[in-house]
Length: 70
Image 1 (cartoon, rainbow, N blue to C red):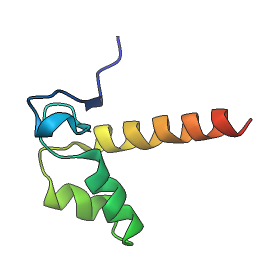
Image 2 (image 1 turned 180 degrees about the vertical axis):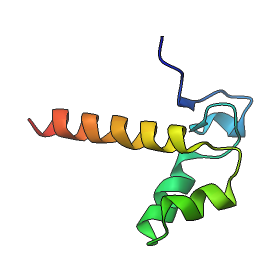
Image 3 (image 1 turned 90 degrees about the vertical axis):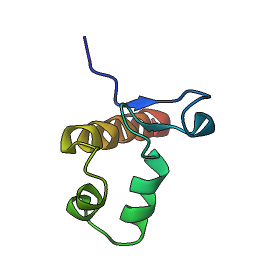
């Protein structure tokens, strides 16, 4: 069974999608990347998020984008 990467619950950050097991919104990673920061910069700023979670999120996002473009 695959480990959950993203979670969303009304009692955690008001339901904002966060990296599972943290209170770090996924949008924060997107903002870092859009701002030209690296994954390493993000991980340094948010040590509760693992590299595996970030890579898993990006792979899933890529898969959905490619599937949606077909």
